[in-house]
Figure 1 (cartoon, rainbow, N blue to C red):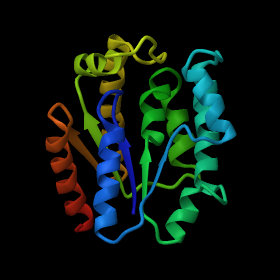
Figure 2: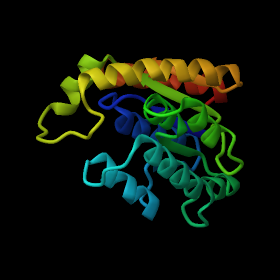
Figure 3: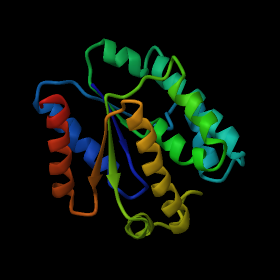
Length: 205
């Protein structure tokens, strides 16, 4: 199974991914946890862009993500395809949904969608779990104890991107994609319980 977690920053993706990985191990599976941008050369360049250290246009950023995502799928050591072929479950923190929501709202959406969703070397996930959180709560969580935020971490920007995510999901569900929107405003246990119900619904685990 190939499961992707999405959500605006502060929604708790990292924590919930770890809990799901533990659940899958307990069920006898061998989950491979990964993330985008990757730790490969393409992903490292993207992280410099997100930090503001390497200025790029939205179209350039979208293209960089496509390249990183292709590498993420086909890399012989870290690739999603290889892990799935070896019988492992793959859990990914962010995928093309993020590109469609973020870069797709800043440059030509149809181009970003075609580059990602129609690319033969970018695999479609079996399930996307979106941890839904209000932009106000997101800002409260991500700024707590931090002195620096990334270029997309502003309340008005997060509001725009959350709305864009919902538009993206509507379009992708029309193409047959499986997407579960989970309320992440509660505590860790409440969110994990909702995720577990979604996993059972789709995979019987």
